[in-house]
Length: 432
Image (cartoon, rainbow, N blue to C red; front, side, top):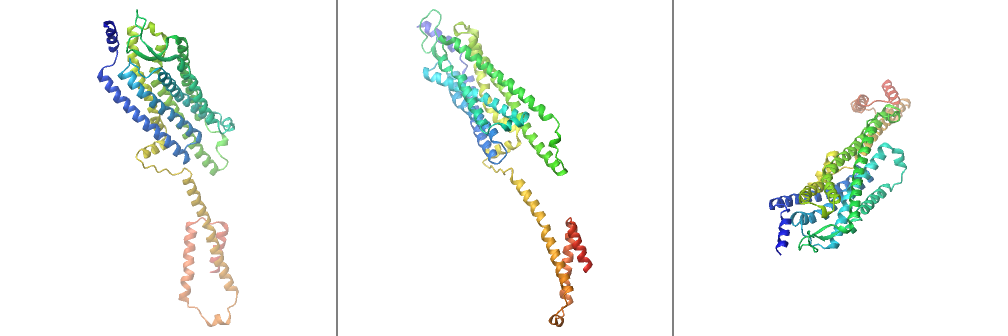
């Protein structure tokens, strides 16, 4: 009995102090709240931007999938970690099945996040560096890539259904575990399989980071290259429109590259402590852990989890930093005043305005021609007997002739006349 109490007292000394527990609880609640709000608003804003023509459907699907994986990581992991890693780190009352399911779901959602980043980077790389091959692919490629990402993350997490579970601590010289010291951990009988799965997941993590970094570098090289002759246009107007569209396209692509670079840096900084902690569990079996090794692991566990969950909150912030349009829509959604104009509405209004201004020239030309025909027909046709008897008052005719002349002068000064209009006005002036 005394030995049992002594063992529990030694384990209790590894727990964080009460002040640290309170601080981490407040920090976790803040991260959880910001993560839920930020990722939920990101899903809504991405769909609104897609409906209004600011985002392509494939980019929207990637953003929604990434936000969903971040939400699942926060909702599944943080409450369990808050209870089991902070307040009661050496006690697990959840049961063996719950321990296995939790480890599987948390691992799958975590690696779905990083694989979603990989698929988004691959699509942007193909669109910028290989546009013709990108257009030749089928329209459902984004859905297939996202399904492949979630399937691979499930395969990465699948071994944890076997190699993890509840296991008690068996001190040296005893055959039974100490009471109330049961952990949700990797099982000793599946040590080799657990070690293989952890190292495989770590290699996948490094491959994704290096691959995304190389794709970003290739995209930056392509965007820095000068425009070819085909992008310049043939005439002046076509050249200006082409340059404007090319500049706008390059700006949107630069925003995508900026986001990818920022998210790779965030994944490296926020995930690396957690990866080191996982490697510590796979480097040595638990029976070979010393007291200092265990003490360092417990301390690293708290820091690694905080940084890991922080990465799920950073993605909405990175969207806001990399896109001005997303930032505007995001803050409008937060204050419940989202008023977003469709991207084609201004183009339609400007085209209608230019069409109406060009159509106003034809009525003016018709009016001038009709007046010229009326004047010439009146002068060529001799007046009848009744018309001779009725002599018009010159004072009544003067406003009718002077008003069109003033109107025509204003039109001649404000409009750029065609050759046909110039001839008509010259003809009319000669008749007068």
